[in-house]
Length: 359
Image (cartoon, rainbow, N blue to C red):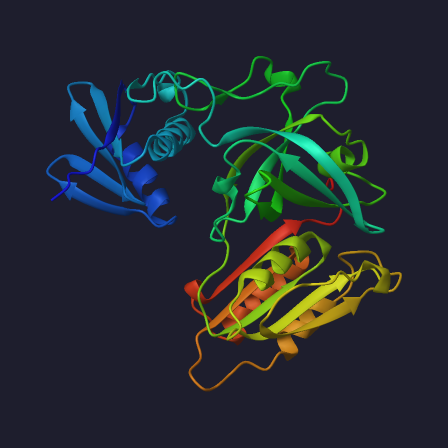
């Protein structure tokens, strides 16, 4: 039997109320899929193949982490440190990790890509094609999203993230750190070593849209990821979203098998925003047009999802929706209370909120 090599890290910290703080941390992690067990005075937290152990040693709380990969250890170290600081406040101000990963200069999921091409897909959708090393990490369909680091335009040099001694992301000058904006990887071309990201262009451009508008061939773009929910195996799908979700819907459609059945509802400004969607599925795509109404002000998606006819033949159902916050709340409530879908049968996310700074 081959023994798995584990990467390990440790820290000791004095907490004002250690038992209550660790219990709160563990309870919070359980909400995100972790499992907790108690062995004597030790709390053991298992999450995605990684493990965190909390125990008392005099006045100190000892934290021991292990994970099957250095990247997994990095994520666990960051999560534990962030939640200790959140729940313990000033008593967790100083966290110093020892062990594996102590020499990490940059987050292991951070990449610098170089802008290779710019293309307008529609009047309001622009595609940036970026080249870099190890783009295969962006190919899995269970993690479709990436954080794009949007640099402040007044800076002459980009600011990239570092890993602090507490395991959290650190910046040379926090006051000028880049903005983080989450986008979908629209396409991955492994032979070419490129990825594509689509940006919605709109008048009240936020940091992400502004990046796409002022993009210059050859400039460097930092990314952290991939992450976020993606494709789930099912027989029948309901995919729905506005322009911001279109790249994710298009990529999922392109990779679903010919046996996949279902419906896709895509809300856009007007007919000029229709894009050709390449797929071999039995999913029927319907475009919903606002025709002059502002994005986020119509019930188009809500009405379409509520009117959809779901299969009754025992097919495995999966619903994926990405939209504005108010529509997100209405659709999620309908799917849970009205349709009775389980948590593993749907994912509804708010990609943006009307009145807030744009993506």
